[in-house]
Image: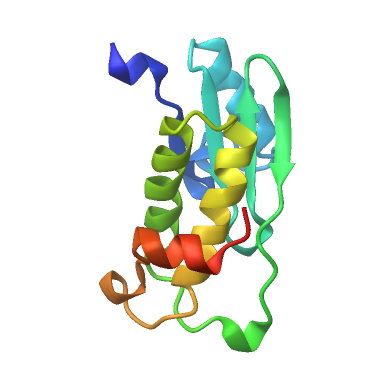
Length: 130
């Protein structure tokens, strides 16, 4: 079914709650051991960690932005999740889909408000390198 093929996107606080003093990859591996195929841990300005049963844990750095460019981070995680779903649905490898989703999230933090900050597909295509 569709849900068994989709990766689990979650926020780092949820995973850290599993074990407060461990690195993010450890709870990821616990989820992988239970049959989840891929876990993404968003880390805000630090990017994300991609954990897969085949490749282990990989850090995907965030798109660098100067501090003055960051206006409002509300909704950036949701933008990341939506963009990741689109890019992975297009068949991109999971780390590349996560990198591009991070680029989309970097666009959203440069605009105030949640809904107004979500870029259109054409804005993403115009604004981001491939």
